[in-house]
Image (cartoon, rainbow, N blue to C red; front, side):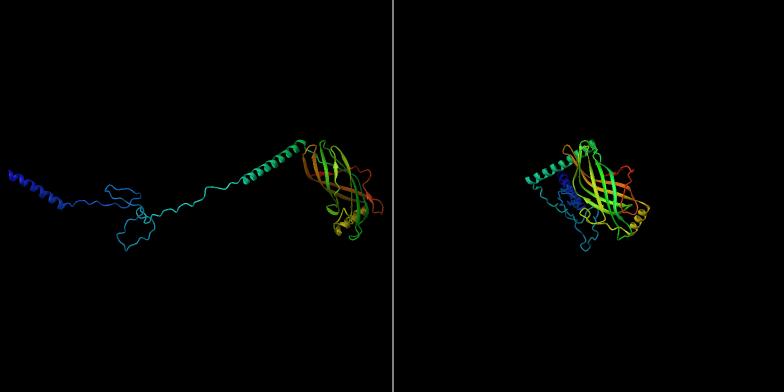
Length: 292
């Protein structure tokens, strides 16, 4: 019995030695680097940022793209640029912004108020009528000897009951058909009271004067056409004005306007061989067209 018990451990030892020779013990190995820092089950820690070692140092990769999902170089993005978060604010800049906002609001309210008053009151334009119109010293025998003087009187009425009209300047132009033959400037201020009227007297000439510093040049064919009409007994002129005016209500509201006055087809009749002519007495007063 003793020999059996001694032999049994010996067989177990022999079996264990055979097993150890056929199957060597397992050695813990480390897996390839993982994309994140952690410890594997075998106890090996991986470090992020290092590529897998190349078993063949003579072969170098040429493809910059990732190989089997693992890039050869882990590039980190550059740090974001630093901008200071604090800004400069001064009391003066805030005060200027406040003043600018107040000025914008004041201009906007003034514009809205002006438009509303204009729409509510709707001031009418002045009325211009030709009372008399005459021509003297008319000579259209040649281009160099062309002379003429025009004299016109108008009645200007203000149809508004609560609005005054200030006439600051009047530029007058005399046309034969659509050709200007004379012009003048009248800078004398005039006032049209509410529901009132004034008499406007305008003179033009082919000679230089204070009211006419520059005399327009009249073409030869224009003078010849006027001469033929003169020989026929009647010459038609177009008298036009550009009036710089200001409308002002009884309160504080005002508005400026440029009035365009057209008094066309003023047919002057000449008697005999004289150079004097005027509108026929039976001709009614000519109503001029007024626009802004």
